[in-house]
Length: 251
Image (cartoon, rainbow, N blue to C red; front, top):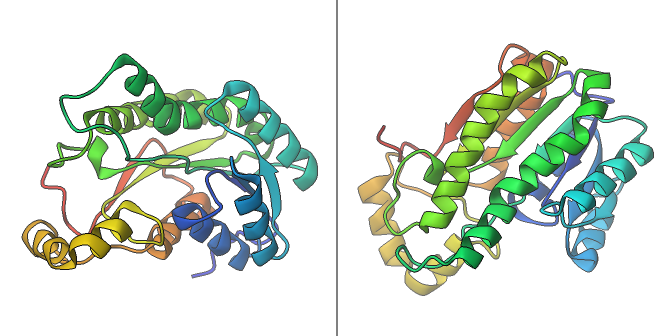
């Protein structure tokens, strides 16, 4: 499908590896000019070199000041901003029942503030281009997933509420926003990469029991949905949370 993205500009946070990198690669393949973002300068610059024409903007977007700087630098380099992908996130936290005030703050900063900071920082630039925001979330924000950290699930549920709630004021500026809620995605260095190394048979049993398609997903599958939502082909879609989980969520 021709997605009409050629010549567009995009900023993808958390894009040195995994889902973020796959989204950046897919946007480039559609003809977009892409700015990458992550906290680790060495990893980010290595990815930018491998993606050839991509530019790297280092920063911790869980910090509002850093988010404003990242948006400003990326927009200055690209000339404008058409697409923002908020992909910073991590499901690593304490086991349910062991939460602390400090852990709540840490997990919400990574999984919620990283997105809200970026949207607020970029909304002016996106309004200028009638642009698009895609937030990468998790099915843990849709229902209770056994063993998933409560901190992470609550942060992702809050992200879904934010996407639904901010869609109307952003829409008044001509900006669309949607979230993708992936299920179990396998890539190097991911939680599922570690679990497969520790107990591949146990993972397969879980997949056959809980997931209709009985397999893990790939970053490229998330990227495919992300670039569709970022494209004019999805021009009437906003305020939605799009599930991509192989048929795991029951509600």
